[in-house]
Image (cartoon, rainbow, N blue to C red; front, side):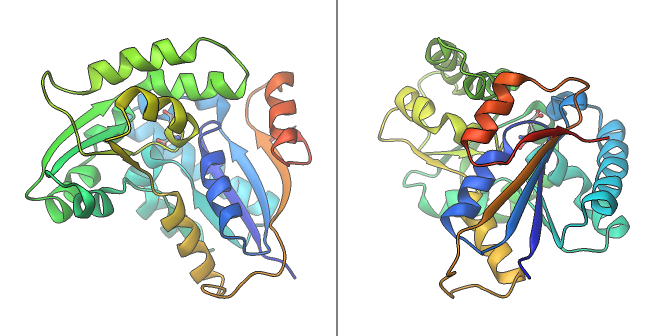
Length: 263
Ligand code: DGL
């Protein structure tokens, strides 16, 4: 029987991870859960975020019964992975900033870590920099506005490029250009085209999506084997009290069967 993967995020950002999973198909069934009721995670206090993800995901695992859980959220993974693995017994794959591959490709050792305000403050993020980019010139920039712009794009809002240009301008110190920008929030690959236009083509953008897809395939025991079937997208679930019709139709267009309330 096909494995059931539950992909989780605070909002639509985890869809960038679903895209990467579909690029390395594992013939799995994928459900998607997002916690709109507590969005944005990057602004929550650490204690609220740990308690919320522990209770919501324990509940989701018992109701939706997945075989594997992907925490498609850097803000939650860099804080709560340990506690989640203690509480939940199925394999859990977390998404954390791709600092290691970024450091190995940065020609002039200049890295910009673009994340949420929560992720830029985490000890976990600092530890990744100390371990994998000790000789790099690293700047961190936290932006909830970019998270909101990715949400707006999925809801078909216009004029987002001008606002992205402003965030991009603020993200770099004056007269400093990064070689590589680490997209350390799963919402940001949804803005890949706009961010690339704004940073310019000489700047490389790196995210964790393909590494996560490889890890999932390896945990499911299908790494390196061609999957004969595509993934099957199941339902998307939101914790928001009211389902947004525009978002629901956008999710159906991406292949989900429907958007349901998780309660
Ligand atoms: N997509 C999330 C992340 O990777 C969370 C964004 C938010 O809710 O602030 O950090």
